[in-house]
Structures are given as structure tokens and as C-alpha cells.
Length: 353
Image 1 (tube, rainbow, N blue to C red):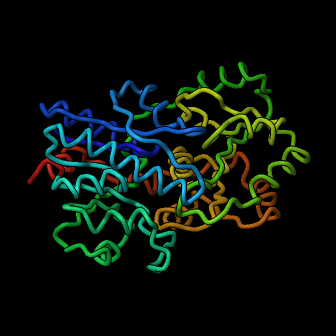
Image 2 (cartoon, rainbow, N blue to C red):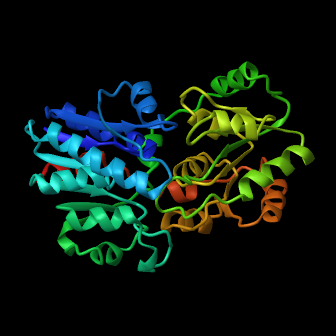
């Protein structure tokens, strides 16, 4: 049985085609997940896409002590569940808890990771905690082509354990996705938004993650000014609880239900994001994109160099860039047409001993 531990929204989207392909080849699959107070996005996505899963453990929140306690409890819960099953391999996006359990039980580990550092160069002082705690335990690891091989080797891995793939992660689930304009129009109408106005879609930074040092005010302060000075629709996609965002942004449409948000990203006039995955998705569709993230990863740098995304660091830069690039569609094909999502060959390598 192949075990997938999916603990982030991105991992659900990324592994959907892999899970389907592995099942198609006749292998049994086990999917585990977690949730917590104010953090249901993963299980909501699994439910939305009808992926069977087992919930084990919970999300620890923003406090480091709470994170550690939650991790210890989850490892025990996973261990007690996994050791009773015939698990032949773990596949995940560097899930710390699953890696520790699989390693302890002698289960081979296949890790995928596109962000080993919060840096687009090779400063190992900026190595992410998840990478430090998982990549050295890998039997095999997969990296996207824009992350140098030498970085993975510095995580105590041999060259023949490391495999590269020729695409940005979002291509795994967007290569055959067809945006629906009627979905977008219906959303605007159902949320009382004016279809004649330009629309900005927003996603905050993953400020409760262990690799983000603090909650930066640029996005929150900047949105208030944008609302006051520009006659636009603003849609906010929550990362955690939606209620605080509704209070913080009473002038915005804050999503409460899980939906296929890619339709919104594809037709928006601007996307402002503090993370990585939705930024990359917006770029894939050619939507003007602003990154308010507190660092630049290797794939961020790829998108910036391709002029598909702009990075800002101040409220003033956010306002100026919003005014300058709103509705100016980009041409993403020059970059994305060079990529090759070869699902079968990757699955071959996953299943190979």
C-alpha cells in the first residue's frame, strides 16, 4: 500500500493525478490528513475532490510550542495507525510527522519539494525547517528543475537519490484545467459584486507556518488604501479562519466555502498573493500578479524573471504596482510551454524499488 500524507492544500492539488494514476495501476493507496481550529482547508479540498482520507492529528497553530506538541501527538497517532497496515512506501511533500514515522518504522520515503530554502540562491541559513527534518530521511527526493541539484545534495543526499522534473508544480493540476468564465461571472453576481468593475483577488501569507517569522502588515494596510482610492471589487481567499478577515475587510467578498478557485484566478484583473502556490497559478493563467511574500524562492525568481510576477516590499510599492499592471494580461506560454508534465515516468520512479 502506498501512503500519501497530505497536510497542505498544495499537496492535495499536486498529488491528485499521482494518486489516481497509482490506483489505475492496481496499487492500494492510503491518504492521511490533519485539521485544526481555523485550519480546515486541507480536509475541505479532499472532500471537494472526493479523495478518501483518514484524519490523524491536528494543526498546531502559530505558536512554536503548540506546533511541537501537535507534531508529537500526531506522530504517535500516525504510528499507531500505520504500523497495523502493510505500507510499502510513503509519498509526500516533506511532511515532517509522516517522515519521522515512516523512517522509524523502516518505510521507504519519497519526498517532493520545491522550496527547500526561503531564498532563491543557496543560503543554508534560510533552509526551511521542513526540509531539514525530512530531506535527509529520504530514500528518493524529487526537485523541480529550477532548484539546483547541489542544494538537495547539501541535505545529506547522494546524487543518485535525487530526481528532477521539468515543470513548475502547479502544472501538475493545471495542464488540463479549463477555466470557466460563467463560473467567474456567477460568483461575482452571487456575492453582490459589480461585473463592470475590475476585480482583485487576494491571498494572505502563510503567517502561521514555521518558515514565516511574523505577520507583515503590507498587504493588510495596502488593501485598505486600494479600497479607498480605487473603485474595484476585492475578493479575499482565506488561508485560515474567514471570520477575522470579514471583520478586517468589511468591503471585500471573503470566501467562506471551498470552491474551485482557479476559475477566479484565471479571469481576475489582478492577483495579490503572500504565498507561492496561488501566485504561480495566477501566473499560469497570465493574470497580472503581485507577490507580497516576505522572501523570494527559486520558483518565485523564475516567475519574476519571466515578467509574470512582480515582488513588492512596501505599501507604496503595492499601490503603485497595482495601478500600473491592473488588467494588463501577461503571456505565460513562453515559459510554461517549455515544461513537460510526464506523469507516467514520475510514477514509474515512485514505484521502483
